[in-house]
Image (cartoon, rainbow, N blue to C red; front, side, top):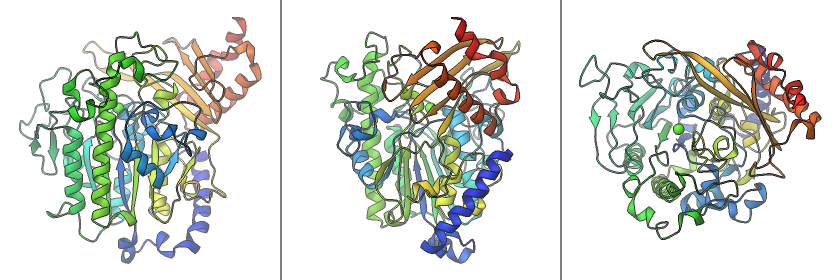
Length: 527
Ligand code: CA
């Protein structure tokens, strides 16, 4: 951890202790006698589920907090959950890509330290979760939790370790993307039902705790929910009886593919199939002439599929009487641009549709229902969740994010709530003759404040490429990029904030003085 982050955590820890002691002596006691009192945690994160695809954002009590319109989707179970949860309107995915997100969520570290800098695949062997990193699950397991992981991991480089075919990758795809994670790399997760990455929603596969492969031949969201329910019921020793549990549930949908009826469930598609797909685009920044435009129906069908299965999981949690002492989070690894901003790339950009993510947290009796604009970054999740579990003192020094538990608990006094958040975009570094990627090219960095979004990108020879600057309050669809000359003071202020965030993150842009080298303000002044 850099010194800035360390100092902040020390301060926050003093404050959270001050807050927790009068409320519950149990919450911060580390002795094992009180392990049973700790809350269970269920962390559900479908892939590429954009915040705009939650129907409640158009309802009273929610619409006042965002300036944009929600997609015309059906999400009744998530709407109900939102009414019981703290709903963050401005949570972001710091580096909005599958693998870097997972590395950051698990370790609380930025990609350069978690080890996961790029989307994991065989040609990027350097991008892989550091086996020695301390993950949220390592800390929870060490403090008596039973930890389970179900679904897409995508945080490790594929290795030639197929349990059924030693010395080979798990498939003959070239290059290989999918991966098997052996027990010694599972970071405290003792129940395992996972895979690397694989995109056939109705023909998924998994490797279980013992490394046995399963091909259930059914919709992955339904199948993974069935496995999660088995974990909750614990009829076959899925978890340690009497111990608190942590379950990470990583659905792949509504991630692509979303091109045809086979990519989703018929009952979900039926809600959208009679609509002209152009009617599904309510955002004025969407270009419905793009080749991807018809995909909205299938994407929304998968959104509804996730909603239905999430509702089934919540119903079972309640039926088992576990809901009162279980923290439930619903979020996503990044958003989906879905034809906004003229791009076919669904993610890896600072545009709201990609960078902003759902984040809802329900903790009965401790966190009250409300909508809150706290700007939670991906690195904040690990320290915040540990503190909510009463393990604030166990947050490892390696974690670089903030403990925002005091803010979420509703007593943010003394909590250093961020006034800006960092955005990171890395691309492949140099490729050798075999196509193997070495290092990263840090193409863009950006900052978002309560009101503005700014991204600065560079060319491969480290010259200024482009500056994006939006007033998200007056221009929520980000259709007018503010020219430098229109407001140089604003630009200077945001550059100052970006430099602060780069230093705080000990980012490569800070270490290599990239802001100074490209002098973005004078360059833009010449235009
Ligand atoms: Ca993803």
